[in-house]
Length: 150
Image 1: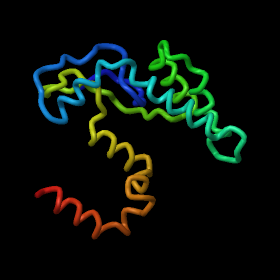
Image 2: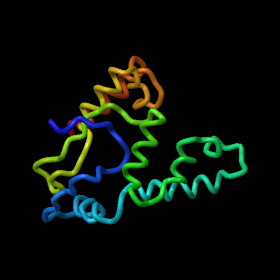
Image 3: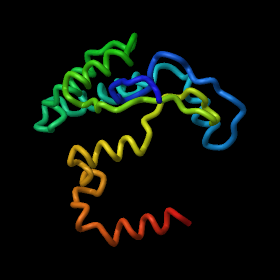
Image 4: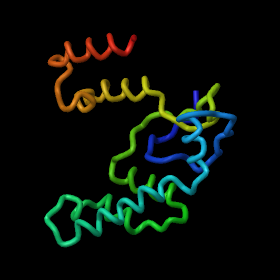
């Protein structure tokens, strides 16, 4: 398994993936990996959102996370945004593992099963079901998994 780390938005600055010959959606993903620090896009969005909300009663106008993002310079954005998210309890204690055997070898990711197990174990699985309790979603989930198998 990969190195234990806090799950965070964006990519890790550490090792860049080894991009191999790819096509379709994977090609688009591979091409976008090298275009700047991914967190700078988050910062740009936060700055625009903060400016739009200025002087309003919007929740955004009083959000310490969005406000904090507007103060982060683009240099080292990845590390700084992760620290801000962790400080505000917005980082999950999940393992980040590199992909293997794919078109983007080494690309960091959170395994879906690890994420689902965390959400279920922390009593938050309902957040993945639009706020509904799992007990009221039997038909919905059966339909989903039946269609997923196709």
